[in-house]
Length: 632
Image 1 (cartoon, rainbow, N blue to C red):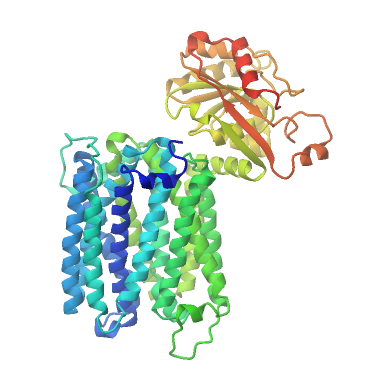
Image 2: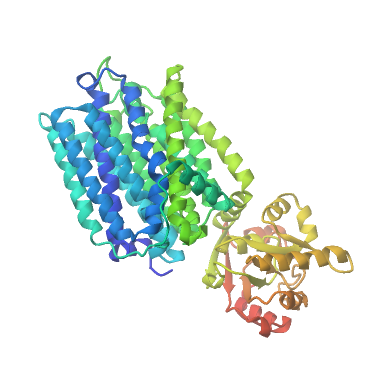
């Protein structure tokens, strides 16, 4: 990786000014919105006759309405214009909107404040495509997970700090509204100052002709993204997260007041714990993913969102408060109530697993999207996000109107998440397969990679490796930056779990010529087609699992492949798998199982690419043997 860790980016001009600009923007959004929601929830009668639950679901809906109307235009502008100057324009707009909001606070004019909510929605709509298109333009591929993790952490810490300060300032008597107005204008000015430090980021499509028809352009953006299946389904997964989050977070003010019997500080406590969860989950992604785009974390995050969402429902039923009728406890008193720590733990875990879910999706979109179309792709995703969040607000209003309680709403959301996850992962089994692979090498094994960056992130290549166990392909696939087409003995596909995994990974079955000449020839055709399409293909030239732990002679199949497809060959070596329960080691099975402790150590070493003209089976065997060394 280019940096020792993700936080090193905060010392560099290519990242730090951008980080603080987006941090202050997220901070200000929530400094303003939270203050408005708190004042409506806890002082409703002096502002409006509408029910607080209606207003608290309406405000997020109005904030994201501009995403539907202007995201398509925003994406085109971000692709057409240089990003630092466009960012400064957006921050000047934010400063103007906060001045309008300040007038609304001072004059006690609710609808002027709601107009400012819509204005801040416009600000966020314009900045969104710039924000996520900036990162892949300035960061290296191996910095994307870390950069996205720090950005998401900064976003949610900004949200947290804005929510906390907004909830505290606005209730200060007698000048709380004035403090709120001054704070939002000051933060907007600081964000503008940070934007002037962002380095030049050239436009990827300066000749793009902007279409102002947001309906047709929105449809065009989404249709373009649908051509790349993994990107489009990642966009849908991202939008689903915002549906889930919007549905849950919008209930926190009334939930804190009516179910937990807390004051505004109870609402702040819930938001604080949730934001800390998302921030920590986002930062942990880099460590859990091995500093690569690991989509196996997405199912892991989805499982957590469902499990802890369901438990939040049961924790809410088990909660009991000692507050007397009409009284509201502050956050400190609330912590002493029976069941409160369980509720906070569930909220923390929902946030953390949300971080595991969303960060890899962002990085996958940035990595696999057409660079000339990335801002418009992000804009298309923002449109989907907005539609999903509007749907979340509408569903909440309908269900609450039908008599559902807020804990029941949490339960419905968690169950819906399970249904959506099963649907998405059935459409793209790569997510689930990567999760199983990730789970294997982070629970049963500890895998160390040597020079894994030599596996190309794009373009065709043939990978060759020694064959030690039935899990070789899973270990290699988990260490690779993108999917690999494995060429494997057809009998492996008959194994119950492994067969499903390899079919899901689109592995290519092969048989010896004596056994099934048609299947062998079809395998070579499939390999040539995969390489022609720019994919990675991995073969085990020994042709079978080793019976002694030593590397057998490499067969001539690799030379036949390179004859048809002139692509580089990358030698690799697995270390530490000899003796695995799924290897052919004949030693006592119990001794083998416990020899290396609960988590056995493995390694995958990757060698220098070999030019097609230099490929011979004998040379490749020597290279693989040298990479493996004495550690079987």
